[in-house]
Length: 236
Ligand SMILES: Nc1nc2[nH]cc(C(=O)O)c2c(=O)[nH]1
Ligand code: SF4
Ligand SMILES: [Mg+2]
Image (cartoon, rainbow, N blue to C red; front, side, top):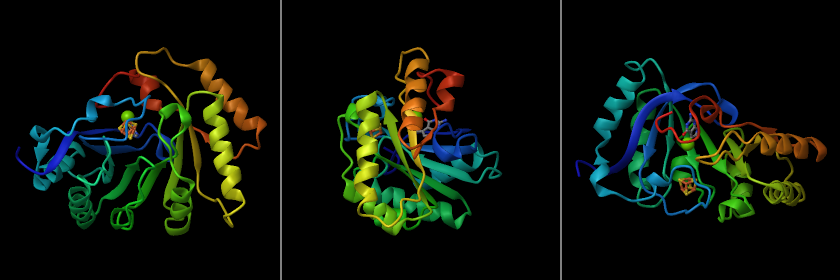
């Protein structure tokens, strides 16, 4: 181990998900996740492998070189689960160092934890709403907290495998509508594109139709990188 940041990979690619789709950025992917989503597309990132430890200076060097020597200033911190308690102090140090160097930072949050010390410093949070097909739950109180504290700097992303998943997002939307004065953040539905499957055209069309038939509250945004490179490619 050469440092405390367990890192799976650092690479330049184009954002393939959510409201920033199409934007070039550098991904810093932490290694280690204990959330356990059934349909996770990056199970290779689950193990907390100490051999993958590097230090913050090395991350900063690689972010700089991957970003064409500092010309790309968008970074997305993902995983794995960058908000696992064992990653948090290291992610916090990385976020501070990147902010000092003028980077815009998005963090991918699994929806299971709201981590104020990190969320206060990053520019944007892509917060998951875990649907039934994941086997994991996002408590509504987490979304309420995001809506109160991080207005204008987060999106809610939900992977949709089937109608049950769509209905659970509708239930969350209706449940929160009763308690919140506004729900003005983007609700993004991501039609699930599993590893080793063909592009799921029928599922995609179903999600579009369910959204249209139920008030059109959500934005349906697929995983563009999987259309281009396939669902099993890494570093894209
Ligand atoms: N292109 C691309 N965009 C992404 N947005 C979020 C990703 C993730 O794995 O967290 C991801 C990813 O793996 N690739
Ligand atoms: S939180 Fe992310 S990396 Fe962890 S199991 Fe779920 S989808 Fe996979
Ligand atoms: Mg991915």
